[in-house]
Image 1 (spheres, rainbow, N blue to C red):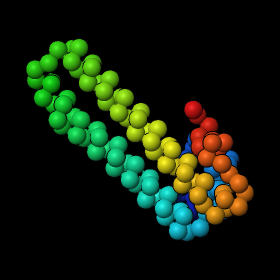
Image 2: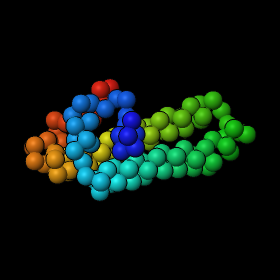
Image 3: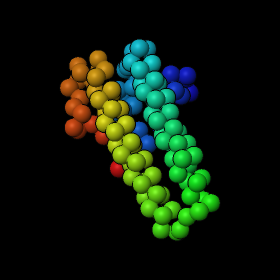
Length: 115
């Protein structure tokens, strides 16, 4: 596997995404990598802050329902972040030169094989 393929590889990518990435320029690949790094930082920061500010103090003095409620908040926040990142990834893929030439639409592009 070439380095270019390894840096943008995802086992759940659809053939359409693989086609767009294979025709992307070096600058477009760099933009995708920066976007991936930013998404990782977003998720990691969310988890770290959540556990530091909320879960750790609650572990000392909390009830089961408080902990369950906060876990629901965390899961909801992570789902919201994942949907936001998915929209940005779809926009990024459709803004490549090759995708614009082939009229790839954000509404019809499937990013992953899994929902």
